[in-house]
Image 1: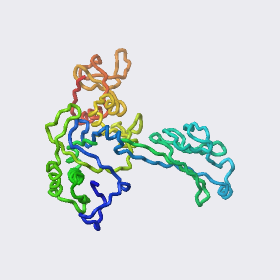
Image 2: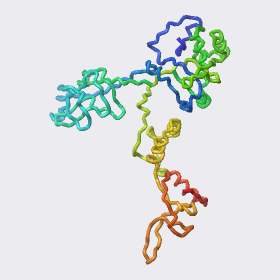
Image 3: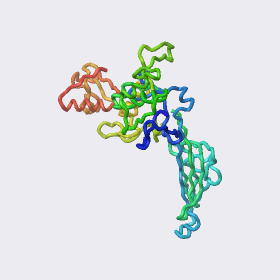
Image 4: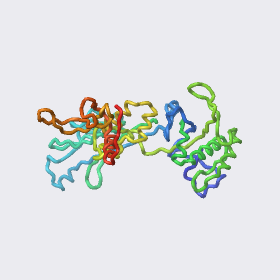
Amino acid sequence: MVSDCLGKPSYGLGQKIHPMPEIYNGQNAIVAVNVHQGYNQLDSLVMNRASLERGMFQTEHFHSYKAEVENKETLETKRLKPKDKTDFRKLHSKSGHVDSLEDDGFPFIGANLQSGDIVIGKSAESGADHSVKLKYTEGGKVQRVTLSANHEGTNFASVSLRQGIVPDIVINPHAFPTWQTPGQLLEAALGKGIASGGLIRYATPFTTPSVDEITEQLPRAGYSRWGHERVCSGRYGKMKRSLIFIGPTCYQRLTHMAVDKVKFRNTGPVQPLTRQPVIYRKRFGEMERDCLLAHGAAANLHEHLFTLSDFSHMHICGKFSNISNVNQRLVAGGGKIRGPFCKFCDSIEHIVKVNVPYGAKLLCQELFSMGISIKIGS
């Protein structure tokens, strides 16, 4: 056992602790602190594919869906109309697929349900559909179906879905000063000594061992004092010149699922001033931009930050590199026409139309209000 997260004062440091892995909310992973080809920028990680295929960090997420109907006693008490009576049944719905439902309106055990499928079929005598449908990011395999009644005389059904997620680890050293987490380095060094036959020590905030106590046990286990090791590059097969800090770290399981972090947006609410998407979960921010830059997805990045964000255009004079305004002017013959016109060259011959983010156009307009002229090369 590498770490004891919930130490109690009644336990002495030398007392033997019986490990109970079934109550642990995490898993120990061997972590190397290194900049790995730029793919683990900021606080992101590079995962070992072989570790993931062996089941590392594999968890199961259960989600229950419930629906209620009134039984006969309740219908007589509330004096509901016969057409308003609802019951569980399989009904072909326009809002979702019912291929996995039985005639009683419930899916069979082991059925694979995807987004858009009906998980509980429920309808009224009048034909109104009250079925429970899976949302866009939901899905999984049916684990259990329960049909029961409560003390209020209401029958209810519950369907539990099981969702699987399969996320050893390379972390960027720049993440520690940015997020101010030097405790992870101390935990990794302490766990490395314990896993190599050292004494079990408490790593809780109430009984924190000193740095000297942590580093004293590493040389006795055959490692350097600070936990550095010489490693071989898996891509080139050569020894790396620098020493890499390696040690085990206990990663705890959170309630966040990878499917909850999916960002998608086509159109939606925007800010009136900048015409950019509002600050929301689906907003493509700075950290998402860094991820796409690290992976070289330039076209995808252009789509998120320009095409689906604040796409706009403006007219530029190719001769003087100034922004041309769109206004209404007189033409020969006394007529009027509306369009771009350059007041510097007094013509429309050199005007070109360019696509720009509306934020850049707004910046130019705000600079104009302060008497600052902008020249743009086209």
